[in-house]
Length: 392
Length: 110
Image 1 (tube, helix red, strand yellow):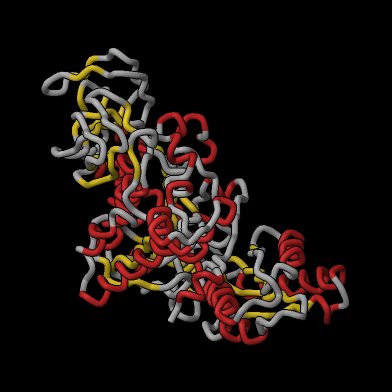
Image 2 (cartoon, rainbow over the protein chains, first blue to last red; image 1 turned 120 degrees about the vertical axis):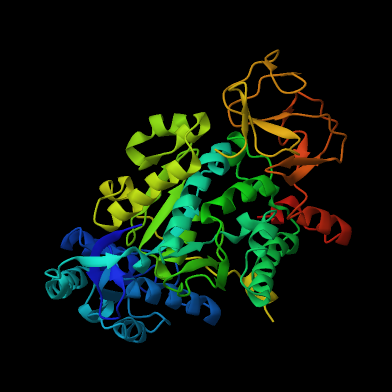
């Protein structure tokens, strides 16, 4: 591994992009947040979402954690928190939380501004002022150990577990070797492979926490009196040759490489920086899963796909890696790294080196296919009543 | 690549696997030079699995050297292995529900 150049933030972390985040605290503030960011320019990135103005406390806390984490992500240089004005979630407190990392943060209330038109104008003014504070910040050299690398998969097929996930896993191992951090999530996709991860946990407490989280996800299916087969593997996964969740999971966990699991964190919680692999308990829904890891501080994600996913993220570049030769050809404009050669003889280490090289060049500023097309899906995982009811 | 490619047609991930992955679309009648050779029984698409051994109903299906499910019907060597004859043993709330008789209808399931 090597160095990259990034934006050092007041809290010491290093961003690979220099954005002003526009964070709506509810669904009601989301259209204004998107409009303001669009009006301002590509340096402004909105995170529109579906959470309501009133959520149960645990659900609200989840929303707050994720938005605060997104605001603190080192790819964000400054932030604007947008509220309609009726939300239970306190936008000023959220702004203070983000500002504690030393970044400039402002708030905007649609009601106080006097409606959406006025809020849009006022919002653009505030964004311009925020951007003036960070726009001249130069990139500086940073070590690869400053990176938190999120690994994700979506639209998996049989090639995912054979080629793309092992290749990303090899890059993950190289980053950990260089002192960096990697984060694996999508807990339902550990089912059937949890023993592989459990054996690698650094201590008994971490091992128990990991197995407990997998057990909880599996029991959610029991609670609903249903089974995972309809959703896991998904119909697309099945068309691609994946028969059971066990088969999908055994292929999926390969993208985390082979290093020890040093910690298990909750959805959206901070991922420890430097030197190791962290597991985040998240749903299998890839957009929410990526958002959880970006809220946890990941600056770059690798996203493997066999069938051909196009998912991106507004804050972190998402590198698409495919091991399916047909997808590599048919969806070339949405893919960043083609490792389908693994099926015909390219070694996993060689494919992994190409993924690692792409990771560093993207950290340096090279744009991913999803960034070029402004594909910026954003969704927060909502805590379900059934989950809340089950907690002690 | 981990695993072993056989005849540029299938990939066997581990020694004790009972299935292999098709590396191209395989037609019925195709001979695969495994030891002993096997004949593909039906069309098996790229990425899908062919049985390397006979499976009885209820027997464990293995890939990556790990269990990936159970045969629901007898599967003969050379046949396509997928959701029609193999199912997961995990996340089976339907079995728990059946045992508990909780009366949830299909419509209640999400």
